[in-house]
Each structure stands twice: as structure tokens, then as C-alpha cells.
Amino acid sequence: MRNKTGFGDRRKRAGRELALVTGALTRDNFPPRMDIIAELQWRGLLADCTDLEALSKRLEAGPTTLYAGFDPTSDSLHVGNLVPLLALRRFQLAGHHPIPLAGGATGCIGDPSGKTEERQLLTRERLDANIANIKKQLTSLLDFETKTNPARLMDNASWTNSVTFIDFLRDIGKHFSVNQMIQKESVRARMEDREVGISYTEFSYMLLQAFDFYHLRKEFNCELQVGATDQWGNITAGIDLCRKKPMERSTARRPAAQCISTQRKPARIAFISSSSSSRTRT
Image (tube, rainbow, N blue to C red):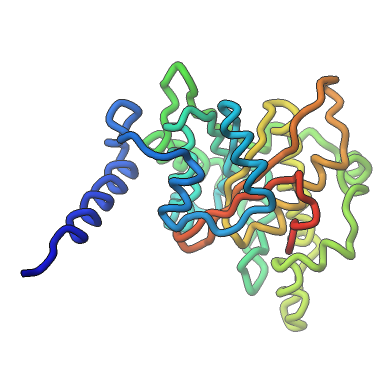
């Protein structure tokens, strides 16, 4: 006789995933589970980590703030955004504080990660329209109304547009080595293609993303980042910046910054901790 137990378990899990995506899975009916790290490992979503032990200890100590960035290159989110969004949702249900970040500034540049040629630059009007549409979609995936840990939608244009080019080079650019930047996979792959190459505009993208993490770390004590594994170089750049540049606003010692990244295909999630600089690979 055929054993249907395995199929039934898979069907239940699939139903829970669908309920989560559609918003039917809430804090009230979310089933009791293992801790968030163990759950992601069980689901096969944990791809890598610079310091998994440090991250686990931090999460055991209490709620943390995490973010994921989404560049408005289209008027809709796509399947590649699903896993980081689900990660934000799972962390929110576990009591943590998610920040979905709209890339109003980084979207003006375009991320070279995973691209074989230069992105087409969008107008400011098109970016604003795309951000407005994405905001509507995010409300169906994250809870912005709960009183305990509501999601906070932010736009990196709000802190980037006022920074002058000279100030950015002096305050941010001086902390980065070109030697290290060209070793990042997103940059190296493009530089190896002599016909296409990479423009200075896209080459600078990782500095903008690093600045995002630094700002959120400084102003909102954000300790985690969620993104795709092709974002690894950009994410570790942010970790390095948080480590090198003082947090002038607060005199209190802040714990080591940590991050999360997900593969472009919705399959895995990688956790990154700045407390282990020797493992910030490209």
C-alpha cells in the first residue's frame, strides 16, 4: 500500500507557504516552531554564514532589526524578491523588526550583480511610480499595522539625495580599497568581459548599498540585512563600512553588525556577521 504520509506533510507545508505569501498566515495562526535559525536550516534556506554562532546568540538575546532592499527597476516585485521578503516575514512573526527598503537612490544607478551588460537608467518619474506600486505589494506580505513590531518602509533616497559627491567620496569612499572592490564577483565578472566591461556608475553601486547599511545601523540600530547571494559582495562591503566608520550619533558601544543574503532563485538564505572579517568572501 502506498505511503501517503510524506505527501501529506509536503502538502501541509506547501499550504502554509501559500498562506504566508497571500497574508493568510498571521501571528495568531502561525504554528509553533523551532527557533528562526533552525527553521531556516530545516527548510534548506540557510546557505552560508560568517559567524553563525554569534548570530544565533544575538537572536537568543532578544528582538533585532533587519532589512532587505528592493530596487524599483520595475513596477512590480518579481520572483527573485520572494525569498528575502519571506525571510523578513518570518523574522517579523518571530518578534523581530523588519525594514523593507525601497531603492529610490540605488535604483537610479542599477546593480551590476548578475548582469552581463549595463542596466538602462530610469527617469526619476518612473522610479517614483515603481516605488508607489511596490509599496502596495509589500503591504500584502508584511504587517505594517501591528503595534508590537510593525514593518517600516523606507527609501534610501531620503538620506542619499542630500549628500554631495565630494562628501560621499571623503566620508564613504575613503574606506574602500579599489583592489578589494574589483575582487567582488559582481565587478570581476563584468571586468573580464572586455566588450562590455563596467562603467564607473555601476562600479560605485556597492558603495551606495554599503552606505544604506551604515545609515540604518547608525540611525535605527539595524543589525541584519537580507538580500540575494549575488549581493554577497555588496553586503560584505556594508559590513566593512560599519566596522571602519565610527557611529558618531551614539556614544554607546554597538554590537557587531550582521547581515543576511538570499540566492536569486528562491532556494537559500545566507547569514553574514561582521564579527568574523576573515570570512567576508567575495
